[in-house]
Structures are given as structure tokens and as C-alpha cells.
Image (tube, rainbow, N blue to C red; front, side):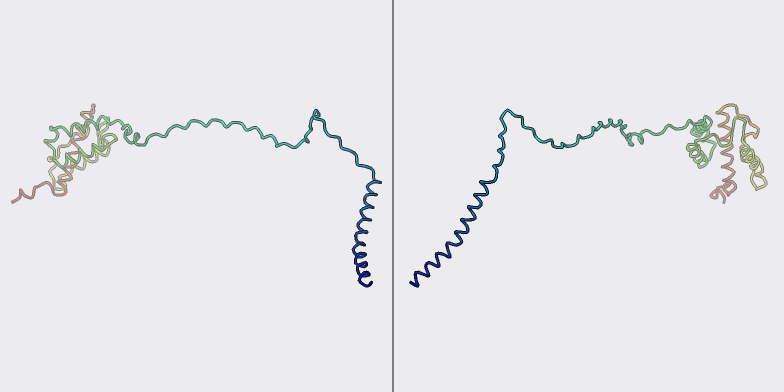
Amino acid sequence: MRFLATVMLGLLAMAAPLALAGGFARAQVQDQAKSPPAPAVPEPSPDAAVVQPATAGPASAPEISSPAAPEAIPAPSDPSSAAASPPSAAPVDPVVAMIRTKLADAATAKDAHASDLAALTEFYAARAGRALWTTEMGFSAKAQQVLFEIEKAGGWGLDPASFELPPAGALPATPETQGDAEIALDLAILKYARFARGGRLTPSAIS
């Protein structure tokens, strides 16, 4: 009897939760029966147009004007070609050109001292301006002063006759005569300078 009572108690303990669960399930079924049915959603017909919701598309890009074509850049000049072509030389004064010609003439060289002739040739070859001592109106003021000093050579123990001076009042009318007058004054000045520093005599010629 005790064993039978224990089994009965166990069955009751197991049946109680099952009964509660069953009652809860029946209550849910009754509530669903009392609530109205949900409205049926009609199915779309195949002929109906599907309307897609409007979506914000990307903003249209601003129009970009095509850039203007760059101006043509001139090609740089070749520096080697510029260096190869020397700049045009300034025109030579006709009197200076005549002096250069006469200094290269043998007739001028035979009466001139070699060092004096070489110095004059180098000087007038590099000269770019006009003649040094002469103008269209004759000798310049500086040339007149030089002529006056050489004429006083006797006061320094020199012989004035040793120097062939052109006339102070000469008025050369052509580039040729103007060149002759300038060369004559040049040679007289250089000779005077040599004699003044003791070059009038050759030391080897003195016994």
C-alpha cells in the first residue's frame, strides 16, 4: 500500500505541470478564435506596373568647360649658335684704318724703331674709337701741348733736331694725310721717351 501511494504521488507531481500547460494552450486557442481575422493582402497582378520608391539620385556634376589650348611657347634658341656668330663689330674710323695700313707698310717701318713700331701696331689694332691726336680741324689741344714740350727738348740736354715733328698748324684734309700726321707725332713721342730715360746712346758703342 505504501508503495502504491508513492507511485500515485509521483504521477500527480508530473501531471500538474502538464495540466497547467494544456490549460494555457486552450486559453490561447480561444483568444485567437475570438479575435477578428487579419485582412488578406491582395497579390499584385502581373500587369500592374511596379512603382519603385523615388530615390535621391546623385547630383548632376557641374559642366566643366574645356581648358583653353596653351599658347605655343617658342623653342629656346641654341646658345651654341649664338656663341658661334660673333656680334657685328662697330665700324672702324677711317683714319684709324689708314694708320693700321701705314704701320704695316715697309716704307713706314724702315724709319721707325722696332719696339716703337710694335707698340704702335698693337695700340691701334685694339683701338675702337677715333684717332688719338688728330681731328678734321688738325691736331687736338693735347697734341699741341705735346708738340710744345718736345720742342723744348734742348732744355733737358736733348737735341730738338733729333725729333721729326709734324707742323703744329697742319690741317690734314684726307684720312691719309691725317694718318701720316698722327704716325709722325706718335714716333716723335716714343723716341723722346726713349731718349729721356737714357736710350739716346747704345752702351755697347761707347769705348
